[in-house]
Amino acid sequence: MLVTQEKAQALAARAFLRCGVRDGMAADAARMMTMAEMMGITTHGLARVSNYVDRLQAGGMDPRTEPVITAPAPALLQVDGRNGLGPAVALRATRAAMNAARATGIAAAFCRHSTHLGALAPLLWIAAQDGFAAIITTNTAPMIAPAGGRRALLGNAPVGLAIPDEDGMPVLLDMALSVAARSKVRAAASAGASIPETWATDAQGRPTTDAAAAMDGLMQAIGGAKGAHLALCLDLFAGGLSGAAMMGEIPNANTTPDVPPDLGHMIVIIDAARLMPPDRLSARLADARNMVETTPRVDPAQAIRLPGERAVAALKTAQAQGFTLAPDLFDTLSRLAGD
Image (cartoon, rainbow, N blue to C red; front, side):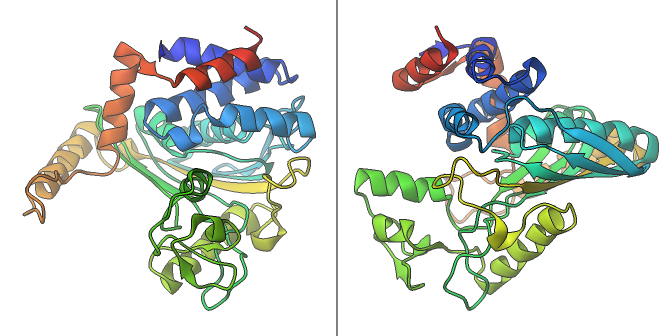
Protein backbone atom coordinates (compact mmCIF):
# COMPACT_ATOMS: atom_id res chain seq x y z
CA MET A 1 0.00 0.00 0.00
CA LEU A 2 1.36 3.43 -0.96
CA VAL A 3 0.51 5.98 1.75
CA THR A 4 1.40 9.56 2.56
CA GLN A 5 2.93 10.76 5.80
CA GLU A 6 -0.33 12.52 6.65
CA LYS A 7 -2.42 9.38 6.09
CA ALA A 8 -0.14 7.15 8.14
CA GLN A 9 0.09 9.64 10.99
CA ALA A 10 -3.69 10.05 11.03
CA LEU A 11 -4.23 6.29 11.28
CA ALA A 12 -1.75 5.91 14.12
CA ALA A 13 -3.12 8.93 15.97
CA ARG A 14 -6.69 7.66 15.74
CA ALA A 15 -5.60 4.28 17.07
CA PHE A 16 -4.21 6.01 20.15
CA LEU A 17 -7.18 8.35 20.48
CA ARG A 18 -9.52 5.35 20.61
CA CYS A 19 -7.55 4.19 23.67
CA GLY A 20 -8.23 7.49 25.40
CA VAL A 21 -4.90 9.19 24.64
CA ARG A 22 -5.08 12.99 24.57
CA ASP A 23 -5.02 14.68 21.17
CA GLY A 24 -1.55 16.23 21.40
CA MET A 25 0.11 13.12 22.83
CA ALA A 26 -1.52 10.92 20.19
CA ALA A 27 -0.36 13.23 17.40
CA ASP A 28 3.19 13.46 18.77
CA ALA A 29 3.57 9.69 19.15
CA ALA A 30 2.09 9.10 15.69
CA ARG A 31 4.51 11.60 14.16
CA MET A 32 7.55 9.95 15.76
CA MET A 33 6.52 6.44 14.71
CA THR A 34 5.63 7.47 11.17
CA MET A 35 8.97 9.25 10.75
CA ALA A 36 10.79 6.12 11.91
CA GLU A 37 8.88 4.12 9.31
CA MET A 38 9.75 6.64 6.60
CA MET A 39 13.43 6.50 7.58
CA GLY A 40 13.42 2.76 7.02
CA ILE A 41 13.49 1.89 10.74
CA THR A 42 10.50 -0.41 10.40
CA THR A 43 11.22 -2.40 13.58
CA HIS A 44 10.44 0.75 15.57
CA GLY A 45 7.93 2.29 13.19
CA LEU A 46 4.24 1.76 12.63
CA ALA A 47 4.38 -1.95 13.45
CA ARG A 48 4.74 -0.83 17.09
CA VAL A 49 1.33 0.89 17.14
CA SER A 50 -0.46 -2.39 17.86
CA ASN A 51 2.00 -3.19 20.65
CA TYR A 52 1.50 0.24 22.23
CA VAL A 53 -2.28 -0.13 22.00
CA ASP A 54 -2.00 -3.42 23.90
CA ARG A 55 0.04 -1.73 26.63
CA LEU A 56 -2.35 1.20 26.84
CA GLN A 57 -5.26 -1.18 27.27
CA ALA A 58 -3.38 -3.34 29.78
CA GLY A 59 -2.34 -0.41 31.98
CA GLY A 60 1.41 -0.34 31.33
CA MET A 61 0.95 3.06 29.68
CA ASP A 62 -1.41 5.78 30.92
CA PRO A 63 -3.52 7.16 28.06
CA ARG A 64 -4.91 10.13 30.00
CA THR A 65 -1.69 11.82 31.03
CA GLU A 66 0.79 14.38 29.74
CA PRO A 67 4.39 14.91 30.93
CA VAL A 68 5.21 17.51 33.57
CA ILE A 69 8.39 19.51 32.90
CA THR A 70 10.23 21.49 35.58
CA ALA A 71 13.54 23.41 35.45
CA PRO A 72 15.76 23.12 38.55
CA ALA A 73 18.27 25.27 36.62
CA PRO A 74 18.03 27.33 33.41
CA ALA A 75 19.77 24.66 31.31
CA LEU A 76 18.56 21.62 33.25
CA LEU A 77 15.10 20.11 32.89
CA GLN A 78 13.37 17.31 34.77
CA VAL A 79 10.57 15.57 32.91
CA ASP A 80 8.02 13.34 34.61
CA GLY A 81 6.50 11.30 31.78
CA ARG A 82 3.72 10.07 34.08
CA ASN A 83 3.73 6.72 32.23
CA GLY A 84 2.53 8.29 28.99
CA LEU A 85 3.41 7.24 25.44
CA GLY A 86 7.21 7.22 25.33
CA PRO A 87 7.65 8.71 21.84
CA ALA A 88 5.45 11.67 22.80
CA VAL A 89 7.17 12.13 26.17
CA ALA A 90 10.56 12.20 24.47
CA LEU A 91 9.40 14.64 21.80
CA ARG A 92 7.99 17.01 24.45
CA ALA A 93 11.29 16.77 26.38
CA THR A 94 13.31 17.45 23.23
CA ARG A 95 11.26 20.52 22.38
CA ALA A 96 11.68 21.84 25.92
CA ALA A 97 15.44 21.26 25.82
CA MET A 98 15.65 23.03 22.45
CA ASN A 99 13.81 26.03 23.87
CA ALA A 100 16.16 26.15 26.85
CA ALA A 101 19.25 25.78 24.65
CA ARG A 102 18.19 28.80 22.59
CA ALA A 103 18.69 30.86 25.75
CA THR A 104 21.60 29.04 27.37
CA GLY A 105 23.51 27.54 24.43
CA ILE A 106 23.26 24.01 25.80
CA ALA A 107 20.53 22.26 27.79
CA ALA A 108 19.71 18.79 29.04
CA ALA A 109 16.43 17.07 29.84
CA PHE A 110 16.27 14.02 32.11
CA CYS A 111 13.04 12.00 31.90
CA ARG A 112 11.62 9.51 34.37
CA HIS A 113 8.33 7.56 34.51
CA SER A 114 8.42 7.18 30.73
CA THR A 115 7.74 4.19 28.50
CA HIS A 116 9.25 2.65 25.37
CA LEU A 117 10.72 5.46 23.27
CA GLY A 118 11.26 3.70 19.94
CA ALA A 119 13.76 5.01 17.40
CA LEU A 120 15.94 7.97 18.31
CA ALA A 121 16.47 9.06 14.70
CA PRO A 122 13.24 11.14 14.42
CA LEU A 123 14.21 13.14 17.52
CA LEU A 124 17.71 13.66 16.14
CA TRP A 125 16.29 14.84 12.80
CA ILE A 126 13.91 17.29 14.49
CA ALA A 127 16.74 18.77 16.56
CA ALA A 128 19.11 19.00 13.59
CA GLN A 129 16.46 20.65 11.42
CA ASP A 130 16.35 23.51 13.93
CA GLY A 131 20.15 23.85 13.99
CA PHE A 132 20.87 21.85 17.13
CA ALA A 133 23.40 19.13 17.80
CA ALA A 134 22.07 16.43 20.10
CA ILE A 135 23.06 13.49 22.27
CA ILE A 136 20.17 11.24 23.28
CA THR A 137 19.97 7.94 25.13
CA THR A 138 17.37 5.84 26.91
CA ASN A 139 17.44 2.75 29.06
CA THR A 140 15.49 -0.39 28.24
CA ALA A 141 14.47 -3.69 29.77
CA PRO A 142 17.46 -5.95 30.52
CA MET A 143 18.79 -8.11 27.69
CA ILE A 144 22.59 -7.89 28.13
CA ALA A 145 24.68 -9.26 30.99
CA PRO A 146 27.31 -7.13 32.73
CA ALA A 147 30.85 -8.03 31.69
CA GLY A 148 31.56 -11.57 32.87
CA GLY A 149 27.95 -12.28 33.86
CA ARG A 150 25.33 -14.64 32.47
CA ARG A 151 22.13 -12.98 33.69
CA ALA A 152 20.45 -10.13 31.84
CA LEU A 153 20.85 -6.93 33.83
CA LEU A 154 21.42 -4.19 31.23
CA GLY A 155 19.39 -2.84 28.35
CA ASN A 156 20.87 -2.37 24.90
CA ALA A 157 21.28 1.36 25.65
CA PRO A 158 20.31 3.02 22.36
CA VAL A 159 22.39 6.15 21.81
CA GLY A 160 21.83 8.88 19.23
CA LEU A 161 24.05 11.69 17.98
CA ALA A 162 23.12 14.52 15.62
CA ILE A 163 25.12 17.32 13.97
CA PRO A 164 23.07 19.85 11.99
CA ASP A 165 23.72 20.85 8.39
CA GLU A 166 21.99 23.84 6.82
CA ASP A 167 22.38 22.09 3.45
CA GLY A 168 19.94 19.42 4.60
CA MET A 169 22.26 16.46 5.22
CA PRO A 170 22.85 16.29 8.98
CA VAL A 171 24.90 13.53 10.54
CA LEU A 172 22.54 11.20 12.42
CA LEU A 173 23.72 8.16 14.35
CA ASP A 174 21.09 5.98 16.02
CA MET A 175 22.39 2.68 17.31
CA ALA A 176 21.94 0.25 20.16
CA LEU A 177 24.81 -1.40 21.99
CA SER A 178 23.69 -4.94 21.28
CA VAL A 179 25.28 -6.50 18.20
CA ALA A 180 21.79 -6.91 16.72
CA ALA A 181 18.33 -5.74 17.68
CA ARG A 182 16.32 -8.23 19.75
CA SER A 183 13.49 -7.78 17.25
CA LYS A 184 15.71 -9.47 14.63
CA VAL A 185 16.21 -12.47 16.90
CA ARG A 186 12.46 -12.58 17.61
CA ALA A 187 11.71 -12.51 13.86
CA ALA A 188 14.21 -15.31 13.21
CA ALA A 189 12.71 -17.41 16.01
CA SER A 190 9.22 -16.93 14.59
CA ALA A 191 10.45 -17.96 11.14
CA GLY A 192 12.44 -20.92 12.45
CA ALA A 193 15.63 -19.40 11.02
CA SER A 194 19.13 -19.40 12.48
CA ILE A 195 21.10 -16.32 13.54
CA PRO A 196 24.82 -15.46 13.47
CA GLU A 197 26.52 -16.70 16.63
CA THR A 198 27.77 -13.17 17.36
CA TRP A 199 24.24 -11.89 18.00
CA ALA A 200 23.15 -13.64 21.16
CA THR A 201 23.78 -16.36 23.72
CA ASP A 202 21.64 -19.10 25.22
CA ALA A 203 20.49 -19.04 28.84
CA GLN A 204 23.92 -20.25 29.99
CA GLY A 205 25.76 -17.39 28.30
CA ARG A 206 27.08 -19.50 25.41
CA PRO A 207 26.98 -18.00 21.87
CA THR A 208 24.24 -19.66 19.82
CA THR A 209 22.87 -19.73 16.28
CA ASP A 210 19.50 -21.04 17.56
CA ALA A 211 17.14 -18.06 17.58
CA ALA A 212 14.66 -19.84 19.88
CA ALA A 213 17.42 -20.53 22.42
CA ALA A 214 18.56 -16.91 22.08
CA MET A 215 15.09 -15.69 23.06
CA ASP A 216 15.65 -17.41 26.41
CA GLY A 217 19.20 -16.07 26.63
CA LEU A 218 21.08 -12.80 26.27
CA MET A 219 21.93 -10.32 23.57
CA GLN A 220 25.64 -9.78 23.06
CA ALA A 221 27.07 -6.28 23.49
CA ILE A 222 29.17 -4.72 20.78
CA GLY A 223 32.85 -4.79 21.70
CA GLY A 224 32.38 -7.37 24.45
CA ALA A 225 33.15 -6.01 27.91
CA LYS A 226 33.63 -2.46 26.60
CA GLY A 227 30.13 -2.41 25.14
CA ALA A 228 28.65 -3.86 28.32
CA HIS A 229 30.37 -1.23 30.47
CA LEU A 230 29.16 1.53 28.14
CA ALA A 231 25.59 0.19 28.30
CA LEU A 232 25.80 0.19 32.10
CA CYS A 233 27.04 3.79 32.27
CA LEU A 234 24.44 5.06 29.80
CA ASP A 235 21.78 3.37 31.92
CA LEU A 236 23.12 5.25 34.94
CA PHE A 237 22.81 8.54 33.02
CA ALA A 238 19.33 7.86 31.60
CA GLY A 239 17.91 6.01 34.59
CA GLY A 240 20.17 6.78 37.53
CA LEU A 241 20.42 10.56 37.15
CA SER A 242 16.79 10.96 36.11
CA GLY A 243 15.42 9.01 39.06
CA ALA A 244 13.82 6.40 36.77
CA ALA A 245 14.11 2.65 37.12
CA MET A 246 17.52 1.33 36.12
CA MET A 247 19.09 -1.94 35.01
CA GLY A 248 17.38 -4.97 36.55
CA GLU A 249 14.61 -2.83 38.07
CA ILE A 250 13.02 -2.39 34.62
CA PRO A 251 10.25 -4.91 33.85
CA ASN A 252 9.90 -6.69 30.52
CA ALA A 253 6.90 -5.06 28.87
CA ASN A 254 6.43 -8.03 26.52
CA THR A 255 5.68 -10.35 29.45
CA THR A 256 4.19 -7.77 31.85
CA PRO A 257 2.37 -5.24 29.63
CA ASP A 258 0.29 -4.10 32.60
CA VAL A 259 3.31 -2.85 34.59
CA PRO A 260 4.55 0.73 33.96
CA PRO A 261 8.27 0.36 33.11
CA ASP A 262 9.44 3.74 34.54
CA LEU A 263 12.02 4.18 31.77
CA GLY A 264 14.51 7.04 31.77
CA HIS A 265 15.78 9.20 28.89
CA MET A 266 18.60 11.72 28.66
CA ILE A 267 18.41 14.41 25.98
CA VAL A 268 21.29 16.88 25.57
CA ILE A 269 20.78 19.72 23.08
CA ILE A 270 23.51 22.09 21.82
CA ASP A 271 22.88 25.31 19.92
CA ALA A 272 25.51 24.73 17.26
CA ALA A 273 25.26 28.29 15.92
CA ARG A 274 26.74 29.51 19.22
CA LEU A 275 29.94 27.66 18.30
CA MET A 276 30.20 28.67 14.64
CA PRO A 277 28.03 30.11 11.86
CA PRO A 278 25.80 27.46 10.24
CA ASP A 279 27.44 27.91 6.82
CA ARG A 280 30.86 27.24 8.31
CA LEU A 281 29.61 24.12 10.07
CA SER A 282 28.06 22.91 6.81
CA ALA A 283 31.37 23.46 5.05
CA ARG A 284 33.15 21.41 7.71
CA LEU A 285 30.60 18.60 7.30
CA ALA A 286 31.14 18.74 3.54
CA ASP A 287 34.89 18.34 4.14
CA ALA A 288 34.21 15.43 6.51
CA ARG A 289 31.89 13.82 3.97
CA ASN A 290 34.54 14.12 1.27
CA MET A 291 37.22 12.58 3.51
CA VAL A 292 34.96 9.67 4.39
CA GLU A 293 33.66 9.03 0.89
CA THR A 294 37.14 9.10 -0.70
CA THR A 295 38.61 6.64 1.78
CA PRO A 296 39.92 3.56 -0.09
CA ARG A 297 37.23 0.88 0.05
CA VAL A 298 37.53 -2.73 1.10
CA ASP A 299 34.71 -3.51 -1.34
CA PRO A 300 34.73 -1.15 -4.35
CA ALA A 301 30.98 -1.70 -4.78
CA GLN A 302 30.19 -0.67 -1.19
CA ALA A 303 29.94 3.10 -0.73
CA ILE A 304 31.28 4.70 2.45
CA ARG A 305 28.93 7.26 3.96
CA LEU A 306 28.52 9.47 6.98
CA PRO A 307 25.98 8.05 9.45
CA GLY A 308 22.37 8.82 8.67
CA GLU A 309 22.63 9.55 4.95
CA ARG A 310 20.52 6.54 3.99
CA ALA A 311 17.82 7.36 6.57
CA VAL A 312 17.68 11.02 5.55
CA ALA A 313 17.43 10.11 1.86
CA ALA A 314 14.64 7.63 2.61
CA LEU A 315 12.77 10.24 4.67
CA LYS A 316 12.98 12.87 1.95
CA THR A 317 11.81 10.41 -0.70
CA ALA A 318 8.89 9.31 1.47
CA GLN A 319 7.91 12.92 2.13
CA ALA A 320 7.88 13.67 -1.60
CA GLN A 321 6.45 10.44 -2.99
CA GLY A 322 4.79 8.58 -0.14
CA PHE A 323 5.96 5.21 1.15
CA THR A 324 4.76 1.64 1.17
CA LEU A 325 3.18 -0.33 3.98
CA ALA A 326 2.59 -4.05 3.89
CA PRO A 327 -1.14 -4.73 3.33
CA ASP A 328 -1.49 -6.57 6.63
CA LEU A 329 0.08 -3.66 8.55
CA PHE A 330 -2.16 -1.17 6.77
CA ASP A 331 -5.19 -3.32 7.61
CA THR A 332 -4.12 -3.53 11.26
CA LEU A 333 -3.68 0.24 11.50
CA SER A 334 -7.03 0.81 9.83
CA ARG A 335 -8.74 -1.59 12.23
CA LEU A 336 -7.13 0.02 15.29
CA ALA A 337 -8.11 3.45 13.95
CA GLY A 338 -11.71 2.34 13.59
CA ASP A 339 -11.81 2.69 9.81
